[in-house]
Length: 232
Image (cartoon, rainbow, N blue to C red; front, side):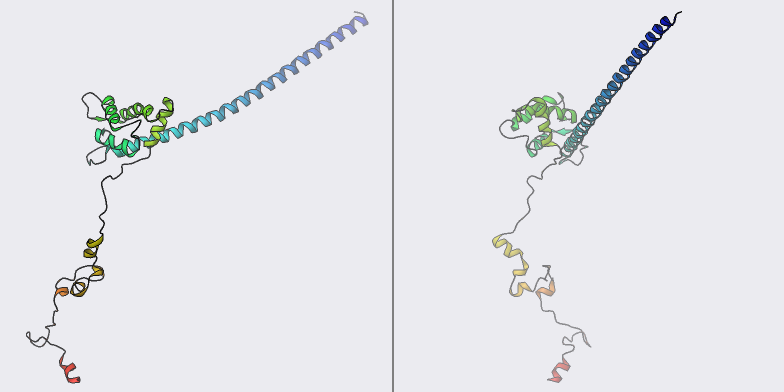
């Protein structure tokens, strides 16, 4: 082979090598960009998953509070109740205490109708799942300006974390003449002597002037008075 041919072959080889090097570099750069893009996508996905997880956790906490409220109302007024089932009376109380009944969108009649709808045909109580179905039935009536999902979430928030209010239990209050009759600190005369400072009755000692009968003989009723008379 001549020198010229060898030079041409060498030149072509160098050109091919340069082309191959460029191709490899291009692939490496492309791969680098690809992996960088993948890493960004993974980071974004990780952030999204974290947000979703927080949302799910928050939702589970709300559901836990909702179930707790269900059980508190389920056992209200019944010492034998297990909290697994709720009767119609307690269901109506829950709807009233938790402001589910607003007198406009949801009335007491609506509450009774929904209870009969979700319970079993022969049952007189509802379980927790049926309770949630009942709330779902009332949600669109209570929150008419929201879609189905938002309405259900809002009605659950009304109930979650709540407990029965002690309706009808009032503390006795003394007023006017009654207060004057029961407040011993305002008694006067002989009545005042019948009670101590705490208001507790003194018994017989507060009603009678008891003379000390101790002495040398049982009939003697003025022990200790002789010296006082002599000194005079």
